[in-house]
Image 1 (cartoon, helix red, strand yellow):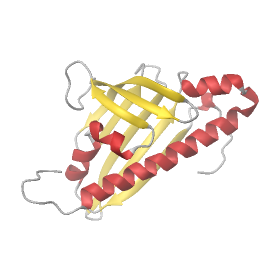
Image 2 (spheres, helix red, strand yellow):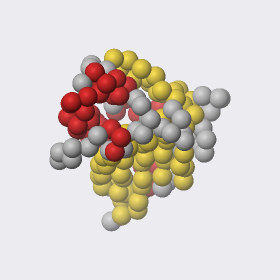
Image 3 (cartoon, one colour):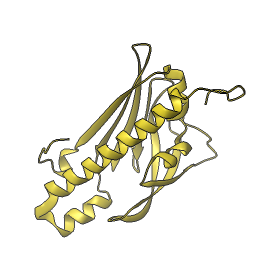
Image 4 (tube, one colour):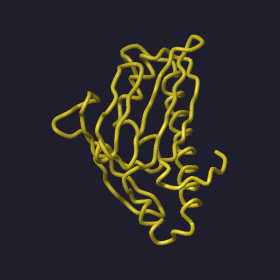
Length: 177
């Protein structure tokens, strides 16, 4: 990721992509299992479906608990805002109309496998990062840049883990996973 000089109000985005030697349906089984995500993230600690839900669906909600060395611990409620099985899964953090962030996985059948993209947008609503910016407004662009680099690094690691799981040979009785 190169320096953009973006400010929080610019709603900066980052996207990572990876090709996986598995069909979209197999990759989707992993991507849509959000309870699997804490295993792949240094920041996300746990995920729990709300309102009796057990998986993604339009309007479904989940709580995510995260921890970061510099930002502490926090929990957010996310809302599924895009859901098309084997193609797209996106959620807005906190208020779906004015989120603190939007996250999206897209899957595309490509070269006999799947092109998987993970994308996120910071803002427009205030988030925990806003407090760091409030304390050091003259460093806003650097704070945003560093955080986006962290997201990019963590997202790339998540996609690598999904790739490993999707491409590993299945044993009998294992089903889709």
